[in-house]
Image 1: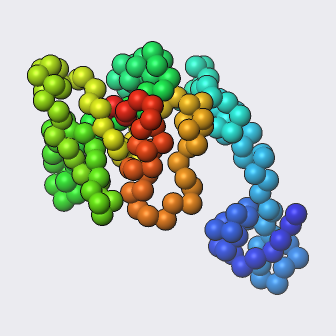
Image 2 (image 1 turned 90 degrees about the horizontal axis):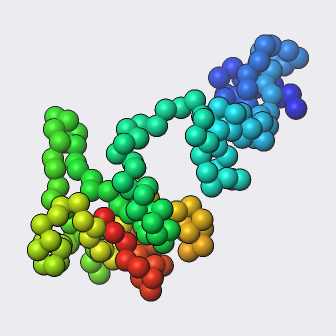
Length: 182
């Protein structure tokens, strides 16, 4: 489908600008076909998020620090119902200084604000900082879960309008199963 629009307005509307044509001072534009974009992403990355739960091992994009991912992925392979969260440090915006947070579980208060919880004494007694910490909540933007299991428990609610609601939602969905581990 060919449309004509003022120069510079086509791209934000999902149109591809082309050479001039029949318009009055406009630029010819072609409506993009989403299926073509999906196919090109598959060809480029070797993965189609809608159709596959596996990433092609022979894709051209190298894994970023693959050795760091192996321990986490092996824990999920051992038990597909595990949901793992990394320990996340803070980078100060004005100095780029890394501020390391102590290991903690994630929780929330009655105002639904995410908070950090001191690990239980039995975890501290282990003396192993890499041991998982059972936690009732999570940071919704950073976790590892088996894709099929994630679908079985309902994914995250795309209509959530409360910031941080995913911190609580996933914890409640799996609370009758196994706790989330950091």
